[in-house]
Every structure is written in structure tokens, then in C-alpha cells.
Image 1 (tube, rainbow, N blue to C red):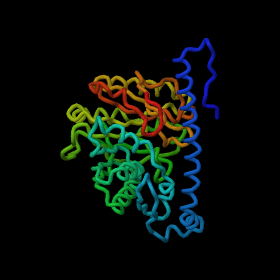
Image 2: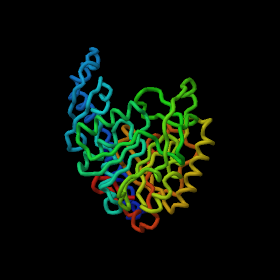
Image 3: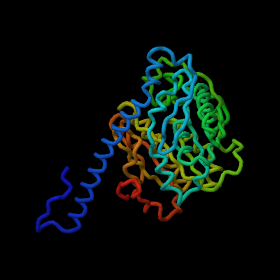
Image 4: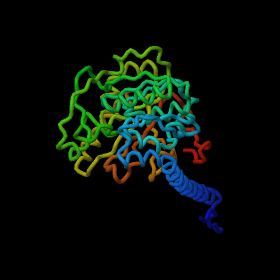
Length: 342
């Protein structure tokens, strides 16, 4: 790959430097994709015995623990009838990188995970720091059961809650396409074609403000991945957010189809309004398009992108909501990962 841009007498030094920086970033992203694909193939070879047990129908009768690495840490994954095989293919994701970058601005000893599924984020953050205090919320009973098993066999410092967070204490229906569906939602209209034939089932929902989490430190990390109900989660956490001023990691999905764009844009505007009231600003985490686990860039943005369909831009749905009072947050760099600063 050519790394030296052409320069002529008409081109200023600043333009030359800018073009060189862009080429270096392109080269880094290309190298990162090749490394990620190679690492994925190696991981598949390492778990070949697990794959064979599943394919020969033996996994349901052997509830053993498999080992894999997340980052530099070796972790145990309970196979539980082979249901967590995909977790063995996990790579170190962008959340561990973010925690390293955010330690100047937040109390990274405490992580509150709303939408924990069966432990993907827990494995990443607790492997990054075994001493981290982790609180996880997951209403899907099958996923919650595996979340408990993953935590127990790794002896993580976790407290787990088998319900969803929202803006009121009430029952809601959750919709899913499989037992461990990471896209399960209480807002089926975000993907109406997906849940047209799904009846859903009842779960409990409570505001985060009503949950007795002891001694939450100021500036803790709050992660929200709730498939369309971000606004309700924030409304139910207003007291906690005002008092503790956490840094928030949040997935905000684009529209599923063209026909859902107006509703998606309306939800985004409501979310922008409540974040403005809370005195938070937005930063987009640009992820690698191929794997969506590697962080390429952090961009300060004034609003969520509108008129977007998820399939065209799946790597631009993850955000940091940061306090406006942190004056130098925009100066954060990604030099430790080899990515240019924002």
C-alpha cells in the first residue's frame, strides 16, 4: 500500500500532512481487518473439539467448562449444552479499550450493564480488570441463567438482576427470535417484520433509580444496550444520573428498514432532548465495519445521524454520552491503539 502522498509546488505543507495522516489511518484500518480475520480463524481452530461435540450431538450431555482468552486473560466458559460456543470466539472488544481511555474521566472500578445478555460485556470488562465491581441487568431468563453461570465459574465480583430497566415499575412483554437472542426487545416495532409472528412473554421492569445498588461511586460507567428502549432507561435513571454523573456507553440503532426511518428519527430526537437536559454531549465510537469489535475513531457529534438504515451503517450505532462539564474530553486520543486522535 502506498503511504507517501504525491506533493507538488502548489500543495501546502499542511495539505501534505493531512493527506499523509489519512493514508496512515487507511493503512492501519486495512491491517486491523487482516489481523482480526486471522485471529478469528485461529480461535475457530482452538475450539475445534467444542464444535465437533456439538455437531455429533454430544454437547447436551457434557456440561463442561471450556477455556479461551479475552484480551490477555484466560476465562472459563460453561458450555451448558453447547449454547455458549459463540462466546469462545469472542475477541477483545472496544469496551476494554474505552475503559482504558476513560479512566481519566470516570471511576472505572464500577460498571453497570443494562442489557447484559449471557455475559459478553461482563467477560470483556471483568477480564480487563478482575477487581471491577459489575452490576448486570438481564430480563431474558435463559440468558440470565447463563450469565450467572459465567460469573460463578470465573468468580467475578458481580451482582446480577433478573429484570429489565425502564421508566416505571411494571410488567412488559419481551420479544425474541431465540432463547439467547442478543436483539431481544420490549419495543417490537423497531423490527416489526422480525416479530410479526412472535407473541412475546411477560417480564418485570423497574427504574434504575428504584434499584438499591449500594455505594455507587460518582462517575461510574453505565452501559445501555436495550434494543430501542434507551429513552425509557434514561428516564428511569434521572435521579441516579443527576447525582452520580456517570459516563454512559449506549447503543442507538438506526432504522431496520426504510419504512421505519421516521419513527427511528423521532426516537433519536427525543433521546437528544433528554441528553441535552442532562447536560451530556455525544461522541460516536466508529467501529471496524467487518467485525464491529475494534475501535477506529471517536468523533464528537452534535446529534444522532438521521435517515439511516442499520444494514448500511451497522458500525456507527455505539456512543459515549459524556458530561459537558468535562472540558478536555474532546482531546481524548487513541494513540494507545494506533488510531489517530479526534
